[in-house]
Amino acid sequence: MSTLRLEARELTKVLSSGGKPLTILDRVSLAVAAREFVAILGPSGSGKSTLLALLAGLDRPTSGSVHIDGREIQDLSEDELAILRRDHVGFVFQAFQLLNHLTALENVRLPLELRQEPSAGKQAAVLLSQVGLAERGHHYPSQLSGGEQQRVAVARAFATRPSLLLADEPTGNLDSKTGTFVLSMMSELQRQHGTTLILVTHDPAAASLADRSIYLLDGRVDREEIRRATAAESTR
Image (cartoon, rainbow, N blue to C red):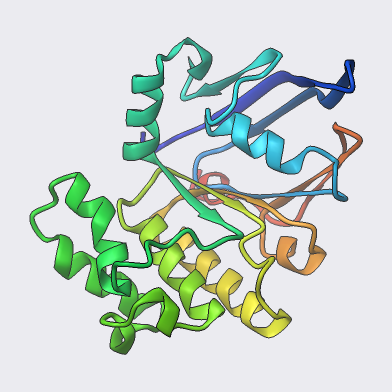
């Protein structure tokens, strides 16, 4: 899946609230090219995180479909979805989701060990160095600042060289300066690895790093902005 393309078709998500239907997403369609960096913006309650969960197969739509390289992921079993996410999809969350009993190096090394990579330790050390934490690998999450923990989380997300990286408000728990640094670092790794990156954010400054921004409002696509040609287009 090194040339991954992702497409959502008429995605709708309806929940029950007080016995009445509540529409979270309403017929959202979008396509993301291989190696493209797309930001999804919108106010709270616009459906951003729900959309990301549907694209990852972490939730199922009420109607509509998600296709990865032409394959409809709703047709996959839970085991097949788990394998898809393990082998091809990386995640970065607002809450860092590090394992507190593991050091920074061990947190980055873990997904590589699960795939039985023979040089897991070396690869993890290289990634920690790339995010500026070469000297902090032996520290536990509780011994790291919030920005350092998120950098570890980013390194872990890129450890398996995922075709697709989904980031949900990754700077939401960080101050402005640290958040800008983390996003710049994530953008640089995305370019180096040729990863397709979808970033959910409420911050226009964060979205300015993306090739394209998609704005949601009340569960629908409100508008799009294209800032630059995607990596895939620029090589044609």
